[in-house]
Image 1 (cartoon, helix red, strand yellow):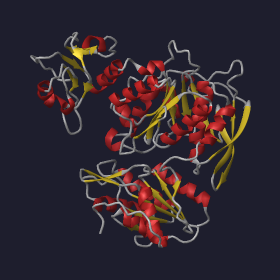
Image 2 (image 1 turned 90 degrees about the vertical axis):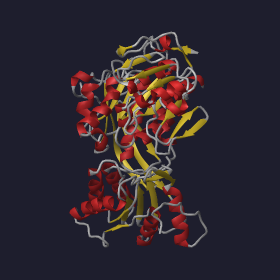
Image 3 (image 1 turned 180 degrees about the vertical axis):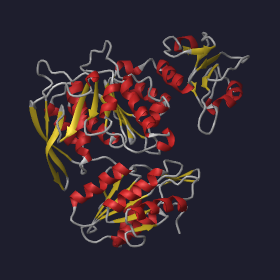
Image 4 (image 1 turned 135 degrees about the horizontal axis):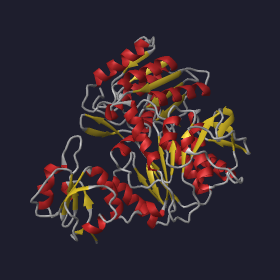
Length: 538
């Protein structure tokens, strides 16, 4: 059993008041309802609740010590005051589990779109190369042979869960961990003690400004991954600390200045350390060639971050032809990011890395086709940002000579500007648009759709001719199917792999893939699954 003093023995932050004692600690929790005898309770101030108001309850339940941010005296148990309880929790959670990240090669992936796909590409590469790898993504956590579902409106896990996962991975004998990290996760210090060695960015576009307040703050949250990168210490594993940046993205200059380790640039078509050329789009995927400098060459070194750009013109030392089994031009960039991390950060041969990205068959809710024999294509995708929606529609254009019909919504209690932008993108790039529910939460669904409709009109859309409002998502899917002609593509966007929809404060079981199969069965007149219930159903 740990004690309070040992947990704080390597604490890197300032203690404002209190002295860690030899008080025994059973476990760490920030939920007063789960406190048991000798637990360490963290009083965290959240959006809706303030843990400091539950300190007395935690002590009544047997808490052995308290950590919080307020100045509090005369408690019957040790109280440690810190500047930021969330950040302190991340470091003490790592201490509680004996710093598992220090025994692992930690690869962090962040960005607005493409994180999960990039994580899955990288995971396949590592497994193809014979490495013992685990992964924590928006879709699931893979720990050895165990797959844990994380699709119920979960992004980056809290710091306690993250450190517990890492400890389980270490215990399972894994050596490498891929961790998908969100801006919320960085802003809330959930991954502060993960000691990342390699960081990867996909892109940074308009998203979550409701939470971060500005694009600059959102970008800064993503940038914390690259500020946190550090060396590998005494690790005997073959890896090189590295920041993998997207030269095609506007974030490149900003992030290259933040990185504390060497930087490597990847790009599609344009010059970079690793780039994709000769891209050929197929009905079942994309073929392309990866050109790059051979990392085994004597003298190869990614340029230093302070250079602010490429140090020298690198001629391509290798050309590897590969194919990915995912559609969408943006997935070339995602595959290239994973390839670059594996080859230049981990020393995996380009040949093995190319085989790895070709081994990924698909990802739940990412451009996933739903086929019941209809004469048009239906695809479910997670695209829930303007940039991702544009990419999905443009990818659909590459797949058919028919029309593209986009169906999506915009979440309540989230970035309101995105509602207009999503509708504008669809009005401009899709042929037809169906606006519907997507987690309205406690906001008026009608008002959300009205805001979206104004965006469609601003881009030349005409209601009931080029775009429609259908509040119930199940009915909207049925409506979209009835719009379709042979060879059209229907994109059902925004939910992807997620398995719930929030109305009010209630999460209703919902899966776009199940709903689409139900609607298609009804459409073609065969027996099928029952349409999941939502409170908007007629």
